[in-house]
Length: 127
Image (cartoon, rainbow, N blue to C red):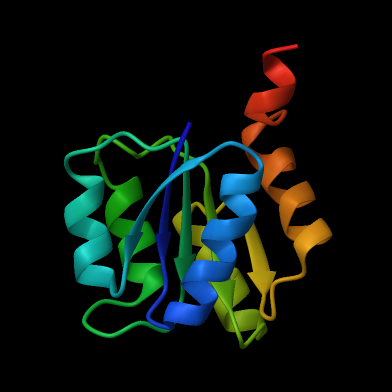
């Protein structure tokens, strides 16, 4: 399974990548929204994780554009942010997010939410 992780903070990106690799994902990453959008035009992902506040194009706009007809329009998307205000939650839901996580990302909770959104872990499917 393939996941795209987009966050402008390298440490957060590495942490999310680590958690996703532990449950069997291959990872592509983007340091900003423009790079994330570019990657969504050429590869079909099984999961996209987007930070809201990124340079160039924010995560909500990336989500809106992905849902507006890209090859990933049906791909589950988890939005992450340090600010869990209701306006961002409302926009994320309106634009088609499958889940919304407030940072800091806690390992067990993050993995459960990924499993809830994507389905059973790839490693479990092989049993």
